[in-house]
Length: 125
Image (cartoon, rainbow, N blue to C red):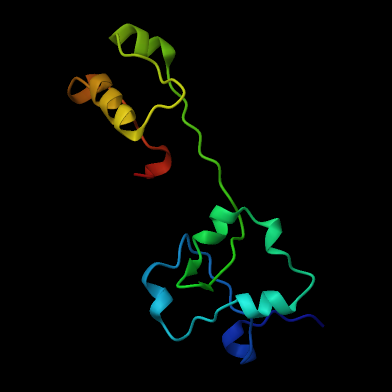
């Protein structure tokens, strides 16, 4: 018979946490530097990870976690709206300052007639 057991019930467990970065938790004593464990395991190669993703889990020379996934964010925009408002469309090399200035320029109106220059997906603000 197969039985699902929570880590607390089993009294022994691997610990996995789904977090975006380690933030302030890196100063806690309950975190373990993974680098020595990974170095000792030939089945794991850090070359399989994008360096910048790993860097999010490095602090003071220690590796406190490894990424489990990567998300790619894209930005869709209405060329028609940019053209109608006389705002230049995004081009290669534009910066966050350019993005902010253009979204402000595209935002206007009140109430039901409000036009937003940018609206985050799913409340990601």
